[in-house]
Structure formats: C-alpha cells, structure tokens
Image 1 (cartoon, rainbow, N blue to C red):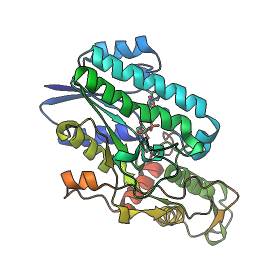
Image 2 (tube, rainbow, N blue to C red):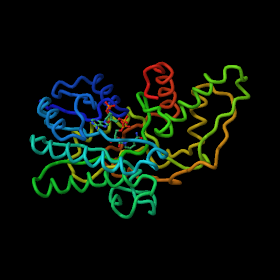
Image 3 (cartoon, helix red, strand yellow):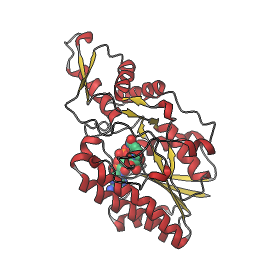
Image 4 (cartoon, rainbow, N blue to C red):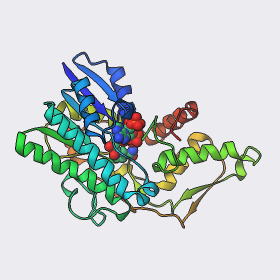
Length: 320
Ligand code: NDP
C-alpha cells in the first residue's frame, strides 16, 4: 500500500489531484492532502511532525509561496526565503523518514530570461531568470539541484515536474495572483460593481499590451499527468508538463475566452502602461509526448468555461 502525502493539498493543483483521486478510488494507494493548517512547512519541527503523523511512502510536493507577476516583482526576498525553507524541510524530512519517491513542482517561469525557444528540461540552469521573479525562480531551480544531490549520495528517486501556467477550480483569485483567475475575478466584479451601466457600454481593462503568449494547462489535466509521473516516471531529471506548442494563446485571447464564458458583452481595452513580463516562454512537451503520446488535453475554451462556472458557483468561498 502506497501512502501519498500531497503538500500544498489545499491549493489549485492539490484540489485538482483530490478531485481526480476521488473519482479513481485507487485500492492500493492512500492519499492525504495537507494544507498549511496541517503543518507550516517553513518550520522544520512542524514539517517533521506532519511526516511522522502521516508516514508517507511517496510525496507530491506542491506547497509554495506562489504569486503572479506584480506580487513577485515586489517580494523577491520573501519568495526566495519561504520557498527555500519549505523545499529543504520537505526533501530532507522525506529522506529522514525513508520516503521512496518525491515529485516536486517547478514552473516554466523559472527558465532563463534570455534563451532560445522552445525551452526544454535541459535548459533550467542556463542563465539568469527574468528579473521580476528571480527569488521564486532560484528557490525552485535549487529543487532540481537538491534532487540530484540526494540521488548522488543516497540513490533516491526525488524528481520534479515543470508545469506551464495553470488554471482551474479553486484558483487564487486575489489581485496579486495569476493572470487567468485575476481576469475572471476583475471581469465578474466589474459586472457586480456597475449594475447601472448597460452591458454593451462596460469597459474592461486588460493589464499590459495583451500580446504576450502563454501556454495554459487545466489543473485537472495537470493532476492526471502528475499522478502518471508518480506511478510511472522513474528519472531524477525534470519533465515539462505542458500543453502542445500550438496551443499557446495571447493574454487578449484569454480575456476574450473569459468574456465569452461570462457572457460579457462590453469592450476589452489593453492598458499598455502596465508591465507585460516575459513576452513568451514557449515550452516543449516533446519528452512528455514521447512517453505519453496519446494524452488528450481539455479544450481551452471548455476548461475556461468550467473554471468560470466554478468561480461563479463558489464566489463566496473563493480566495479573492
Ligand atoms: P496555491 O497558491 O493554490 O496553493 C499553495 C499551497 O501551498 C496551499 O495548499 C498552501 O496551503 C500551501 N502552502 C503555502 N505556504 C505553506 C506553508 N508555509 N506551509 C504549508 N503549506 C503551505 O498554489 P498552486 O496550486 O497554484 O501551485 C502548486 C505548485 O505548482 C506550486 O509549487 C507552484 O509553484 C507550482 N506552479 C504553479 C503555477 C500556477 O500557475 N499556479 C504554474 C507553475 C507551477 P494553505 O492554502 O492551506 O495555506
């Protein structure tokens, strides 16, 4: 019987894993989804207590201080220190407690700023990250270094996945969060805040030029892929978990898809005085495709529709 501990089990990706596992009901695995109430992972004693209580054989390590472009830009020190502490405590405690496998989460936004495209797993350490999020990026990059060091010294199978931008139910809709939940939240609130303005005359502002390109993965698709990695991927080297390169969309196209899902009939304008971040960070999922050629990603518009519907249905409880 595998005992799987999911750190960050109450977040966007953790909740998606829980949804998929509830549907699957595996008979040879027991899952525990830990949030910060179950143990503060920036604290070593509290991390050890969580592992002693749950006695995991396998760990999916998602817990992190996570935020969007604007929050990252002003808080690099916090992102660096919190994530360094969390990652070191989780990996070392997993080692001390004899966990067989740890799958940790990196991100495509930690790749070098100046690079050729598409980016792939071999390029994580090839140059400095974008200055806006260097704290988060270096802390995440060190997970890969640490995984290799545990493998070299003890032969452990501690590995990592590199997702592109993620969205879905249970997202973080706070203003300092990521682009999709931020757009959903602001567009929905515009409606609520301007009941007297006729629908066609409402104006919604997209921050930045709307031109940057991004790959977005639906959290439920990512959850299925992470479960596959846990069960089947036996390498220390990271693996990119992303939609295909052709599925890249502009930020403006994202806003249009959300407008469609919300049935928003007003005008969308781009505020070019706001930062764009990296223009693109196209990632190659060739490694994933070579191992799992037939995986079908949920259609982007369908996934946006489901995510918007979740937000509308759960407006009062959503993190915002
Ligand atoms: P969320 O912000 O939705 O959730 C973060 C999770 O981490 C929560 O469960 C939170 O617990 C937990 N957490 C944070 N600080 C601590 C702490 N000190 N002790 C214990 N638990 C803590 O994150 P996501 O689900 O979006 O992200 C999951 C992983 O995916 C992260 O590693 C992130 O870096 C990575 N990632 C995310 C992307 C995205 O677009 N969202 C893109 C690429 C990678 P609680 O809520 O209970 O406080």
